[in-house]
Length: 194
Image (cartoon, rainbow, N blue to C red; front, side):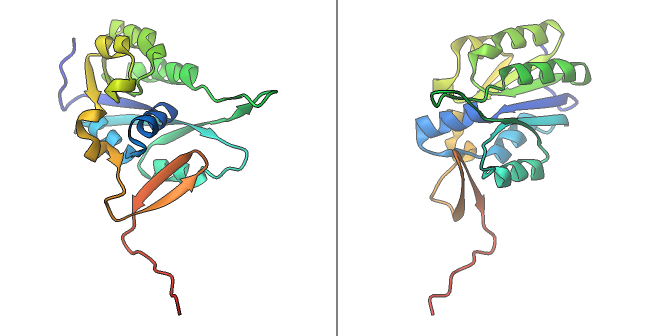
């Protein structure tokens, strides 16, 4: 196992749908992706950070994508596929695997923000290439095999105040299709009732 240290070059891969649905199902809340990114970097040298997102026909999620980009995260966008009978699909697993393998020679550590067990083979491959692999996800929705094979598993459930956006704070909500983001509004604008 490669030891974690500040001199490492890091690549971060965020499975937005996986974390979004985990936070929604477990906590009826939303993920603070800024905090996820900060923790994933951990004072090390960020080479690249990717977020894998889905675009709907309405395009309502554009402000969310822009918010990710403003954090320094490159967005990989896939259109939501709609099939006969109403079934919808937007699977990013293969795209994440390809990007991680492509970036691996340029980094020492891969941080995978997902609990999806489909990534076990990817983690095995990256570790065999001499890479440190860290997984950050919600323990209750993360694959047991993925947690076990990672060099380090970071359980977001141990610090929900950090990784989730709670209504207790002075936040405004921006609803974007199935994805919601909340940002602190430094200058709230109040509607004049006169």
